[in-house]
Image (tube, rainbow, N blue to C red):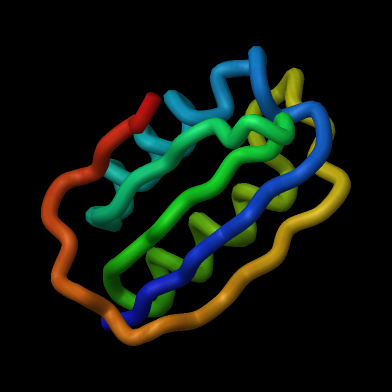
Length: 89
């Protein structure tokens, strides 16, 4: 199990980035959360099997069709045992 704290910059709000992220996380069995930040970026926390989390991080580098991702920062941390996947507001 791994945990990735992800910060995504670019045109990532107003393009359903959070909802697509949550859908893909649930499909992969990844737990955690995703939220918009006041600075226009998106922040997410992913926990799960290494391959599933790494695939989700890689997807964040592209995002949904209308997103324009310019930067993705990932910090690998110790998992805390999150359950479910939430879209935070």
